[in-house]
Image (cartoon, rainbow, N blue to C red; front, side):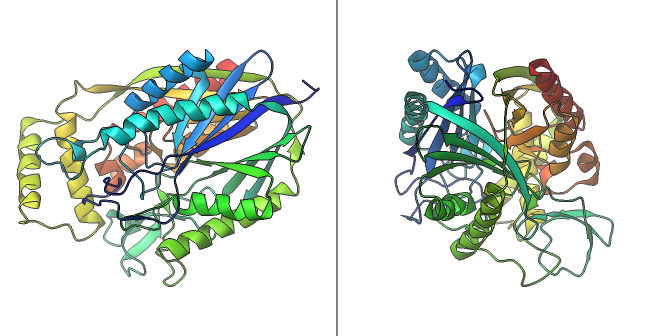
Amino acid sequence: MEENSVKVGFSKVDITPPLGVCLAGYFSKREATGILDPLYASALAVSDGDNRWIFISCDLLSIGDTYVAEARKLIEERLGLSGESVMIHATHIHTGPITRLNPREEGKFAISYRDDAYIAMLVRKLADVAQMAADNMKDASVEVGYGQERSISFIRRFRMKDGTVRTNPGIGNLNILEPIGEIDPSVGVIRFKSVESDDEILIVNFALHPDIIGGTLISADYPGRMRSALSKQLPSCNVLFINGAAGDINHINAMEPGKSSKGYKYSQKVGNILAAEVLKVYQRMTQVSDVTLGSASKVIKVPLRRVNTEEVDEANKFLTAWQNGEWKSKDMGGTAALARAYQTLSLAKHDGSMEMELQVLALGDIAFIGLPGEVFVDIGNSIKAGSPYPNTFISELSNGSYGYFPTSKAFSEGGYESSNSPFTPDLEGILVDTALELANKLR
């Protein structure tokens, strides 16, 4: 291995499901009727000679911890690599299959269903892509760089004139007072350049919900379009996308009518704009001299919101009325009510707490912080600000999917995300403290 280089390998496998599978992400049954573009699992394997880790990014809404554990077991059997050294991330597309256990897919109020045959195949393919990436490792230098993109992502929670907080209140809604918070415009790019050839690997980190397309056609949404745009400009380059802390960020510009849109063409536009910023960063990157690897993870116990018998009874009545057509959801307020009812029934089955894993993969001055939920941007920013690594990248929905991770303040404000979260306001402090504990342990 050459000085200031690591051994790096990349591979990707097609994980597109068959037609007819139920698509994830909505409070309605959507069966796939066609394919706009394929879904992939992409893997990056890295070794410094003494340590190894593998990062896998999947074009999925989320991936349940059960399936992460199954994939990690296969990877360990094949490569001798422990789960602590394997991070499995979902980009959070809303036009892919259901791949986690969810209250909406179980029991008498089930909306749609998982395809167990597909999931069995997916788990094996995750092990396959890890194995192939490990088999492809070659010496490479490492560079890092940053850009900013502010025109495609927007805070989706708003304070209304009546004092309430609403998520996606509608474009041009005259009752909007102000957005709550700021986006994270950072476009982080890591480049691995082969020592022996023109081959390159790019990691792109950006925070934005991939829910632009909708409908019943399978697609990797804007992350897939971004990768395609980059491959045209950089034909020897493979691209792996990591979604940042995007729990309260989406593509809708509610304050300026006509400035944003939806659908497949708009996902292409968003992907192209992001790719253009990546190409700018690509021209001015800084080489990383320290290439020492490290990994750490910790399983923590997080308190859950308590529910009583009356709340459970109300949730059952509410969902019965919805299922029978006696009540209909007309906007995000209705969606929040549905989400809370399902969450109430789910919480009734727990003992007041939940275990989840947080993970850090490090490469010199670079760290990837894996959090198993939809992380609010302010939590991500707090972790980055406190991290001992100057290049810290948030990787939400990694190694599991436990719903929204709002800030403590958001729980008191209300809105869709906090209604749909099973946690308490203690969550923010636990996540930030644990993430920084792991980062400092490695550093």
